[in-house]
Image 1 (cartoon, rainbow, N blue to C red):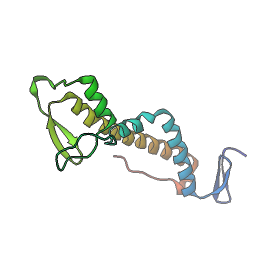
Image 2 (image 1 turned 90 degrees about the vertical axis):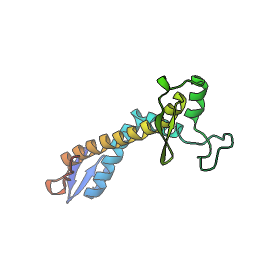
Image 3 (image 1 turned 120 degrees about the horizontal axis):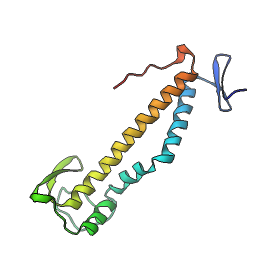
Image 4 (image 1 turned 45 degrees about the horizontal axis):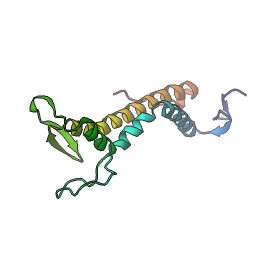
Length: 149
């Protein structure tokens, strides 16, 4: 039996018999997602490094408790470095934006956003490959027409 076959209206894929079209799609998505994780684990590390898990000094009311690993080490490495020309850069802090001249703060506050952008890109690549592979295997009536963005 080949890797992919059609049996009595259901699918056989990689040793799994009697798959519905939905189950076939899920298995292909998981297979492509696992492939992607092997080469893009940096995205998760970048997101996690920006989370405020470390204890820090007492902060003023309304401030987010704790600090992130990236913030702690950026401040150590950059030791008070400022953005050139005294420019105050808007940076995300929780759900608000705050201005800062600290280069370490700018880097630390935007690094998690790079991770989230990487995650979105990864999910887009996985979804595209899943669609291509699924539509190659599935019967014409089971194929999925996804919209393009």
